Length: 68
Image (tube, rainbow, N blue to C red; front, side, top):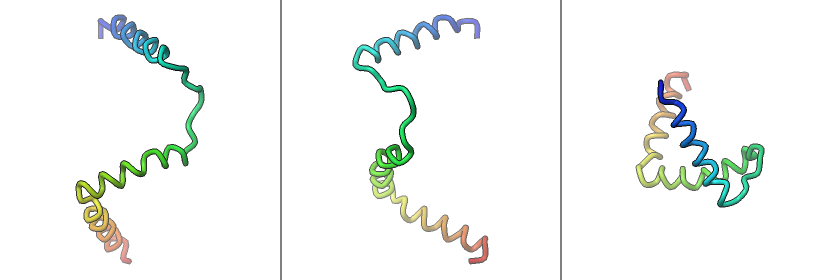
């Protein structure tokens, strides 16, 4: 806790280094653009780690709990 000034300086230097590579547009990204960026990786991870089975098992369990 006592050594916060040096951490702040390190973060500031990192931002300056990032700014040297190009300007970043201010504002937020549209949610659909963010989803399009993330979904391919999510699908790949689901296939690689067998997530489809886990998702279907969880959905089935939730459906049973809800009485459907």
